[in-house]
Image (cartoon, rainbow, N blue to C red):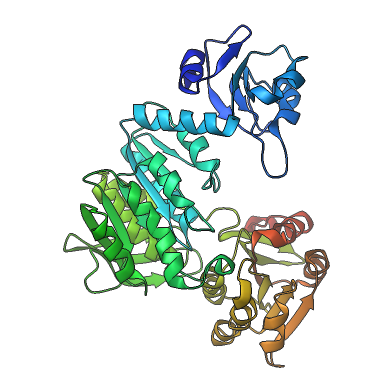
Length: 477
């Protein structure tokens, strides 16, 4: 059997004390007792809301072969007979294991941050690099103080390409994470108004995102968005840090990886990319100009990492939007269907504008409507009323006449929209969910978007529960 880690390696790296009859090794690592599989090690991390030690029994029942627990909690673990590695602090032990995984790896590493598009860019990289070697990448959005070390610690020793997402909502969060990851290539997708409640300006956000540049390996590269207003600040920071190669992407004439032209539709896009002075055509399997723009950074990273560019292009053509980030559903309703664009994972002003563009590019059928289903953008601080109100501009410019809202902050958008727009406003997600399910009609196109804390995934789930997945053959006699 091939092990991710031997038990001896884990105990040594984590400065842990083994108790019980240790298995030879573990096949994986988990911090979720519900999703653990047989042969994996369970790390009983104490989080803000729950303590993993309280779920050790469930982890064992689900197949854990080893658990990592803290010394302070050991007395409470006395009734458990499973092998344990006892450490001072479980999260700190996971960090040590992640650092060891990076130290033993010969993989080429790319890290991604930015105000918008981190996860989508990470997924594009995963797909694009896969034909050229064994890729290890974060699942979901494991981009924080536990997600990054967990992803590192899960990286097999024979990985060819490692893809990491690094997020933040405060200054000094990216710095320790990128110094664990030590990327050969670091991408900053863009700087936009996200987490404004924790920053005073876009310049402060840019400075915090620029922390990713501090961890780039000697001889490595930064890939920066030449179209972004904060480009000069980021470029200067990269040069100050001595980054060997400062590369750029975007539509700017001087961009190293330049988007020369774009042609989009509701399902995909075609781009013409200038790479090393040569123009090439690529198909992107997911729709949206914002996806195409970040694809330029992906193409640049693939070049720098030595991937086969023909295979990269084929992989991008097969790309599909992921759950909560543009995934589309065609649902049966009456004698027709409706189109659901699931953008429910998170929201800030830039990503909402991108989602509005996706909605505008998708034509309703019959008497159907384009409907923007929007919830609060959180962490906007004193700017909240302004940024919510300003969403009225792109909605009106896109010709979207139906706007269904929920959340306290969305009251500002409700008040800003003219009477010509059908505005339905609810204080709670539950109330809006009920309205959406009963009010859709055949031909509608709905785009659902909010910050994660609003729970708009509930609206998506309710629509999927009430209206079946549709195919044209379902309606043929």
